[in-house]
Length: 604
Image (cartoon, rainbow, N blue to C red):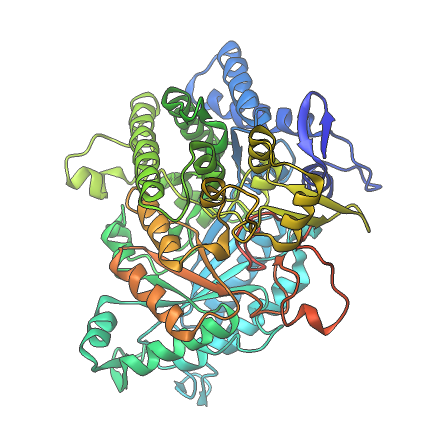
């Protein structure tokens, strides 16, 4: 079903999520803008940032029209806080923040306050708790003992529940702990039960030193961060197996490869990067924030090939938009304001990759798909860097450029310390009507629970068009596809069609990792990607994915075994959990999500 609103075509579910979360309301809670007026508000507010660089009123009006066109065509959308807050008194437009957690009560609760302000404004937060002294360690000021990082994570989790991000977005956090921290085993299993730390994704910070010990089958050291001294050693293989087992059981923890991240840290003089945003696509220094935007690749395929000129124009416009966002945003605390303006990090990425592959006739689980990912992202990254260099000539480089790796390597001045990220796009891809991020399709056809008790049968539009063109379309067939989700076992569908229309669980996990790696090779930030596994996947499957991600130079990796959490975004019929009670005969997808990420925090 498609709704027409002010000449903007949006699905019923896109309209619903816009009304619930994005469109402005009056004091009585009544909606006071349409989707088109929302885009107009955003375009006007962001284009106003051009005034800081001497743009005339006519110049601002022209760029506002371009921003408006890119958004209303659903070819480019910024992150949710920009859509929510641009042109409002709140004016906080960034999605991603990292805050420091130092080893003192004052620092911990100061960070808690900053987190509350960020969540209230619609942002998500990441933390490394690796600097905190371990459980049982001495606290000299009180002659007591430390309670450890996990205990403080619980305080942050409860605070997030209370804040509720202004009622429009649920809080989301990332907690990271070094593999060398003495409390690492407690951390690994900290989300072992449903409902515990439900506002956190967690990741283990993996070092090259640990991976070397794992390869050798040897032990590795645990180091007290307070003293810098080794306290004991553990077998790397046993710890790695504990991580894989916990991830198999609950989807947590993921891994981030901190040495790989810091090999590409653009400002190493400011310190090492130890944390990421909630979905992992933006590694950040303390007090940094990043503005994200995504290009809809599904709309870049024309006549069975990519329109490279159209894509180039969107990349350049997207870089300009995101740079303007920095100057149009009101940041929640002065430390963030200073750090963001000093490094001016942006994260331009893509969504609709699976839809684009389908239009090109390429199966997601094929070498051609990996090659396409490589070609697309290398093009996006190259043009984004060129656009940032051009902006640097107009507006000056980011203030920390002289101490950056770019200056050290004789690179042309850049306006932005980073330019690319690949986000999960959980909600904005729904608005755009495309597949989320770089994920494969979750299902070909499904029933979406939406609009109260209504159930809407939704079919991938490319599959529906193909079925009609090739003469095998029928309502009965669409019903069968909705019951199965996959088309692989339906013999009346031609084999070449089944080969292209593959879904999450049709794909060998290696192709998930290959897709992520292909995008990561050209992304200066990182890539959000969930390797969704069937319920019968094994712990070894998880271990193999983690090892492959490290070999392929990914900056992080997350797996999710279907049904391993009571609360998940996407549901298939007929799983063991569904069989406990009444169940629909169809695949069912929650009303606000259509992407591949089954984690409850992938809503950015």
